[in-house]
Image (cartoon, rainbow, N blue to C red; front, side, top):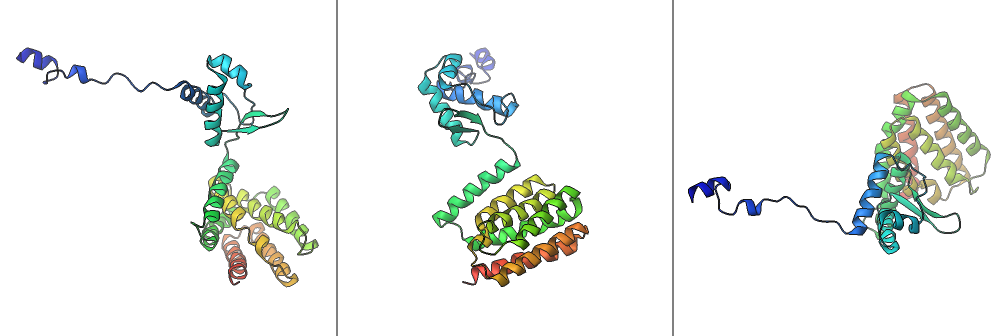
Length: 250
């Protein structure tokens, strides 16, 4: 008896309890897991169209319903996009910092819509992130970055405050600064936060406020051009504080 106890690890029946198996996945989970691995390995590239459901069902030797359920789950995970119509189908989502920003923005939008976040909280965090973003832009900007910023500001200077292009130009301006920072994670967060607060969109812009906003943008670009991180920080703080005060003073 004592010899048997030793061979079983000191307890009768110990080998019977040794775990050598793992949960067997359902067919839908197997299809989902294999496609996910192909995406993360890079074998399936961003923007690539997957084979039709019928072809996938043939390749995986499962039903079309199983394939459809797997694709639906991958879509929920933001790994693929499904487009209807003749030129549609399932496409691998481009997984990059811009996609990250879009997902962050969608989550923020839902939280704001549900009322579980306050818009002023988001605006404050946006300021906390745009300050280092602008400092980094002053340090790392290229001539192309400057050209883009100047073109945006020039367009802002020449249009009226009630032009429907105003909110889009403001978004492009801040996105261009974030891109110039050369920190893609920071750029993703700035994109998401700006997209949701989008203060210029909500402001009842008077000609005076419009002109002051453009002047502030010009000061930011001037500091970035001079590679003066301190001046850039001062200019972006003044600008964001000005917008926030006008937006939340109502």
